[in-house]
Length: 158
Image (tube, rainbow, N blue to C red; front, side, top):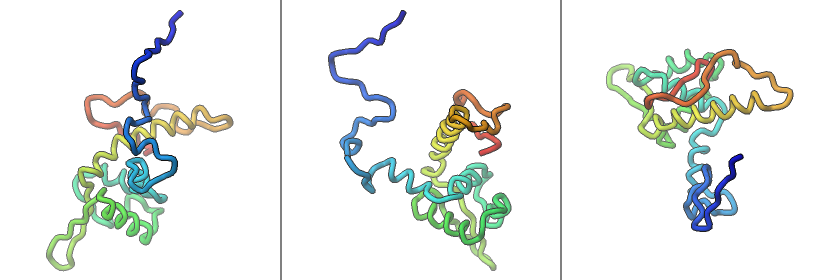
């Protein structure tokens, strides 16, 4: 039989509970790192637009993104791209010529969202299996376990 050992010294930080003064707030604040991350990903379709930019290769045109997400309206795609650019997640690259070409590419901050989205996928996938009365979609095959060697896994369903 094993027992959990507790120390009487300073408590070690628990996963998900950062050891920072901002983590002790009693109401949401705009400067909270979690709120900043959620704000960058806010809105339906945003995570799928980021996913398409993660898939690359390199910068993607508006029409390439629209073709990859055919059910997404032009208005919403334009809004999501503008929001991602405004939040520093993506960069809008305009090249000369006529007509001028515009392409979108993730910034370093945007690329850092890859593992975050993967963690959300993994958490959601586990929740689908655990929820009472839910049908675990895509449970035959797919991703399980941790990522290997530094490159994040990218499930086909994602």
